[in-house]
Image (cartoon, rainbow over all chains, first blue to last red; front, side):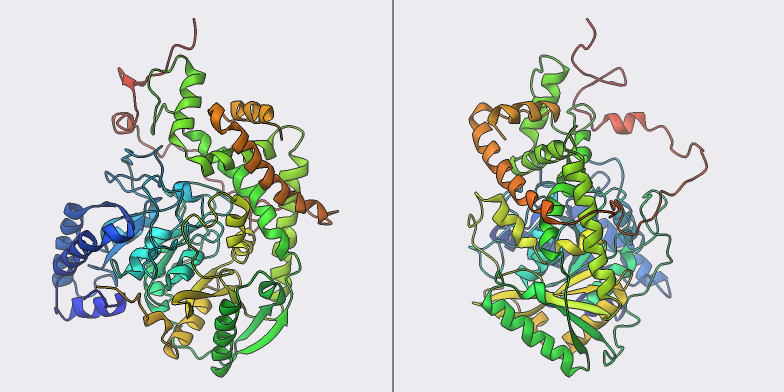
Length: 485
Length: 93
């Protein structure tokens, strides 16, 4: 049963081959039996899940046209607030936080009748590319337990890869959906900035944060995203656009597709095996009729530096809400208010979060603002303009998701800059606000490689279409880790 | 950046940095700032700073009260409360 896709689960629920309660129980048991190996979940919510599944079964029996995801079990990244269910954001700061409300994303899935199995592990406050910054311990890559799953949505990626859950939500501020999807051999999509509501999603860098989904393949990702993406008046950056059915254009041929291959994404830093797998994937797309164009995104090398001003600046502002007063960790016996703030935050945050708060505070401080924050925002526009120019010639940009396959734990532990360069190909899409996805396209040393597709604004449907067509003619997305039980 | 500057910065950020980690923190922040310094190479004359990916302006709404008072529910998340209020150390002598 664990090998079923979401599309297959939907079909079998309607044919009454099993009930939502049965499949919910199956996955809960599967997580309980296997997750000590991967550490992909922070919390399970057995009782709530079974209550939701009972309600879904009643709806499936009573309604002539229940929502597509009615009765389908999923998991949420532990960054989305879930009412009455612990939401930690991977931090000691929120170790015992029970939100008083649901995120809009969570509401959207609940009203569609989907079942929440639990909350997945992540880098602390989504800051990291290896899951090693989680207060609850790192997630292990199901393909090789000595290796990282990527981050920050490493729990969602590993859980889908190990078939502990058919699909999961995730978030992407600089590559946090696409990089772990690539490293764990699954499909992940980050939509256009503003397509999915950020309300109730614990903020890291508000002008970059965007929620998306992780699944086994593009068909399932389309089903999840169609439910997740909506306009939300409670998020002032949410785009006022009607809902879309992303499944509708999956079967369109891609014979007219013009794909741009940016030369900057195939530079010296790229692993040879990764490059070979990506080039072969591009050949597969051309066999389906796509035409390739050599393009240039000349400011690519400035994406990581611009990001490491803008993201820490916004993080230092957003995380100032954790004051030890209203919610979150509070130190013992504070001697005065300043001591309360400093020690609560010093104890509650891990090293990487503190580093980013300090860098952000520095970049925003008097006398440095123009040299850092304003300069980074100017470079951000140059990076966006590269894409605007490219999309005059091509419909989609294709390249590697990350420079190499999954690395071993501790390999980049002492060197923040080496870790930051893991996101060298993914960060630009966040700075520009463009939709992008990663799909599996091969194995190097038995570890997955991801192919990245970057689309024009609101072209999620075209990305999923191209990914689905690729997956109809290849089998990388059906491959699973060897010792999966 | 010197370790003494880190302490000042940590103070501004209301963040305790323990004495045994100050040097290490200063070193790693200097590495990040060296990375960020690459921005200096970009010609940004006459380039407008970009704060929103789609250059959309803030949405306005009518100035009406739409939230209900949820005092009890919100206080449940607080680490220390008294008589329906958040409790903090004495601020005014």
